[in-house]
Length: 232
Image (cartoon, rainbow, N blue to C red; front, top):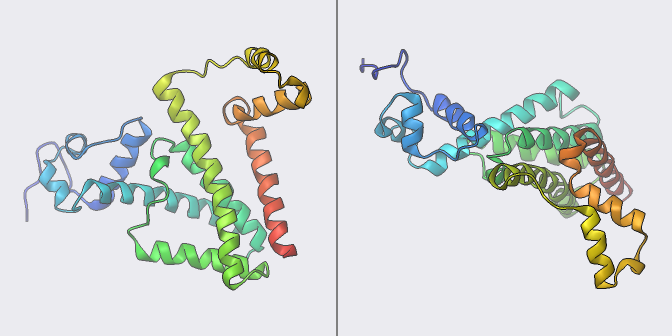
C-alpha cells in the first residue's frame, strides 16, 4: 500500500483531478499542472501518473461538463432514444448553452473530443437517432448536424466569451447613443430605421442584460431550425 501524501486522507484518482481542474476553471483560472498539484496537495508527478499531459486533463474536465449536460437532458426528457426528437434536440441545445455559460472559463475548450469513447459514441448515437426520427438521414443528417451545432455551440461560445471578456477587460463601455451619432457622421442612418438599429444593438448585450429573454429567443430560433429539417 502506497503512503498518502501529506495533507491528504485518500489516494489521488483521475476523477478528482478532473473535478479540481473544472473547479479552478470556474474560479477564473486556466490551471497549470503545478497549480493543480498544489490545490490537490500532491506533487506534479502524482498527476502525471494518471494523465500524460495537461491537455488530457483539460479534456477530462470538459467531459465533466458534457456529463452534466447529458444528465440534465435525461432529467428533462427521460430516455433520449424514445422521447420526442425535437424535445431531445432542444433540451441538448439548451443545456449545452446553460452549462458552458455556467462554466464559461472552460468554454473555449468545449469542442475537444471526449477521451471517453463511450461518451463520444453515445453522443453521436443520440444525434443520429433524433435526426432520423425527424426524417433526416444519411448526408442530409450530417448537414443538419452542422447547422444545429453551429447555432447551438456557436451561441453558447459567444455568450461565454462575453463573460470571459468582461472578466478580463472589465465592463463593456460601449455607448449605444454614441453609436447612433457615429452612424449619422458616417451617413448611414438613412439606410435603416433607428428602432431596428437600436434593437440590434441591444441583442449584442442580451445574454448579460436579460438572460431569460436571451434564452427564450435561443429556443425559438432552435425550434425554427428543427422545423426546417422536418420540412426538408
